[in-house]
Picture 1: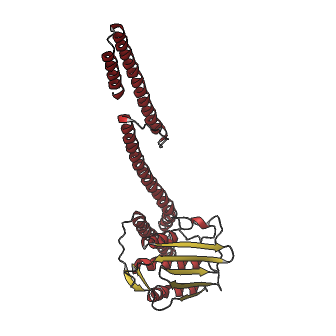
Picture 2 (picture 1 turned 30 degrees about the vertical axis):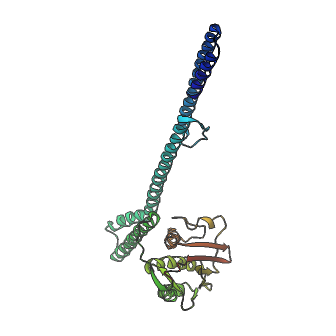
Length: 328
């Protein structure tokens, strides 16, 4: 538009300065031709830009991704391009979020189905045996006890899965309170000392007095217990499991280590994944304890790392970052 106004203005000035009729007609014809040519070029440019936008949208539809867009920097077409890019970005982010949620639910249902298959098969088999009239009363009691054990296992698994799902979704309410770490460790260690004694493993803990943490006592005990149980289960008779703690101005560190069988390097990055079972996992393990422990620690604004060497043992390092207002 500015170009057309400029051409008309220039043509008018030339006509005023020149009283030659022939020259005036020539200038006006030239101005009209230039305006028409500019209009044709502008329309072609606009059509090209529209075609590029249509092509870009088509690519997004075909590949469900965000291909590179050739920038249009001028005028309303540039504004339109920017708005299209914003809308497509938002839509793709929403699509990715929904896709991830669907994948999560699909994986969860697959995991649940896999975990329940074995106990349900066992219950079905023992139920058939109970229906056999030749089975003695003693055998019936034995089968009934095994069925009860499998039902208890599925009940525990359901509760654990519900807890883990709530943790991963961020909907499990935590009630943090200032707690003496020494007392917390002492309380959770009572049943673990018995477990270690049965396994002939030496379990010890060393937590200095005066160390306070802001945690949900129930759930933090659950996290630490799961890690310690894992260490005891993977330590041979005569071995040890040790827990120690320290604190500085930035964080509280809890270290749990053993001299057990260790974890192979290819398994180590995956041990905190739901239902993951490393090569040395026991037959009864379902691979949920460490996953739950990590989620609980994360909810407490903490982190957990694992180091391990096959045949030498495993070391878990938990870091809880301190809130200087609450920890005082």
